[in-house]
Amino acid sequence: MREPTFLVLTALAAEPQHGYAVIEDVRRITDGRVTLRAGTLYAVLDRLRGDGLIEVDREEVVQSRLRRYYRLTALGERRLAAESARLRRQATVAERRLRERRPRPGNAPA
Image 1: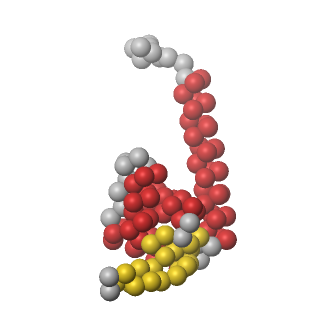
Image 2 (image 1 turned 120 degrees about the vertical axis):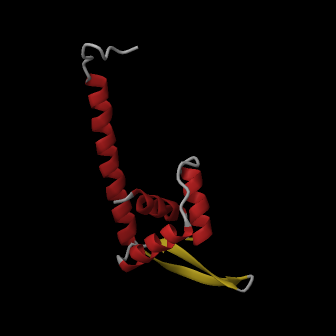
Image 3 (image 1 turned 45 degrees about the vertical axis):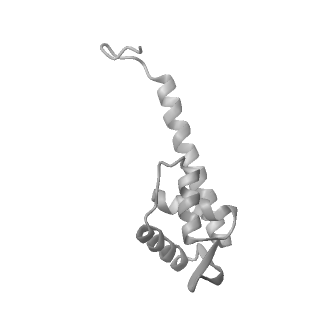
């Protein structure tokens, strides 16, 4: 799963949100490291809807513009949980290997 997809699913795990709120939430949960562009976000949302991982929760008109809220489906929740577990396993392996790493000549720890 690509990072933007993971982050959008993570944002929607808390509650249904509209597009701009997802962009802001992703910025918050990544401490400003990731700023999704609107084109990227809506491509991800369209793909996730097509895959059955999210669905439209509701729509409302705000200042003459349609605001669509999205929520995770049960399949989306399962997929996010599986991806979180996969990333956790990979991080655990990386951390273990860094702890077990033997310094090589010329690469002694500082």
